[in-house]
Amino acid sequence: MQVSSNLRGNTLYIKLVGELDEYTAGYTRHQMDRAFDSMGYKQIVLDLSELKFMDSTGIGVLIGRYKRVKQENKQIYISNPNTQIEKIFVMSGLYEIMPKIS
Image (tube, rainbow, N blue to C red; front, side, top):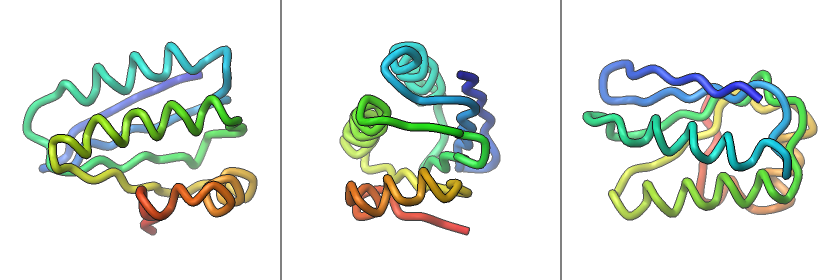
């Protein structure tokens, strides 16, 4: 799993590459939290264009990160999920709390 981030204007972009599962959850959580500690952003865009797989542990990681930023009145948006990840977001209702943007 690779997690990269960059700040453009008031938006923090985080790109997830690889598989988000039980084995990569701790690392992904830590890397995302480090990126969230950056100051000066008002919203987050998660680029999932290269996320190949996500299981229920991955859903838990994303919900945990959502809860963290929601306390700061910030929003997370989802960008570029593949077909499999898209199905997971639809079935789990994650788009209700983390809307998809194009």
